[in-house]
Length: 229
Image 1 (cartoon, rainbow, N blue to C red):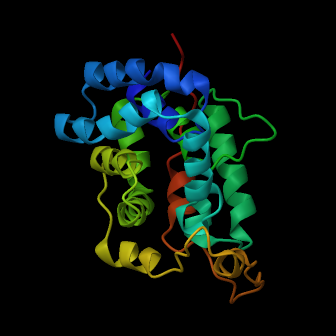
Image 2 (image 1 turned 90 degrees about the vertical axis):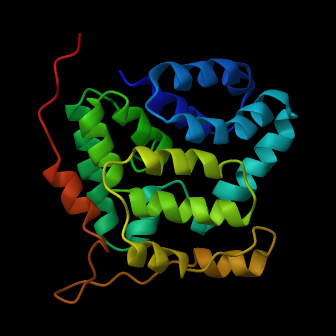
């Protein structure tokens, strides 16, 4: 098991007392495996320190404003791939099936494209395979990091660390396309409503498909479940 991906997954989850207590152990885990290089690990220190020392309610409020209220910072990967298009449902089914082939059972109330859950799955795979799959999302990771940088958020370091580990580096034009999408202030309720407005679903030969082939690559990456020790 690659504990680094579990640690980074935990850092992207809703803050709890348990997560606050685990901050020192997460730091030790990241250092012990060395998957994330030293510079990127140092960049994670402000977030780890913040989680350990800050008031829990303040941490939770910040998390909600960042990731739950702002579509442009959604931690659901397929939100950035094709929004509300009809491909999303099949993509969810395919990704959930891949998890289950690898021995990870997804609870009924969990969406498989949630980035922390995706990282949980990657933690169960061989490192080379995990880095290859992570590379398929690299353009999303970098776009999220850029938006978090604009907000001077310590969560930026988590996305930068993941992008650095990914086997495939993102194309600048794809990242630019994502960054061109609306990125409203979470306190601007009118702008948030406009950003979350459902996109029309199209059918037939002219229907749009996944912007960057992520779903196709996920399907192609399927492998038989590995034997667990």
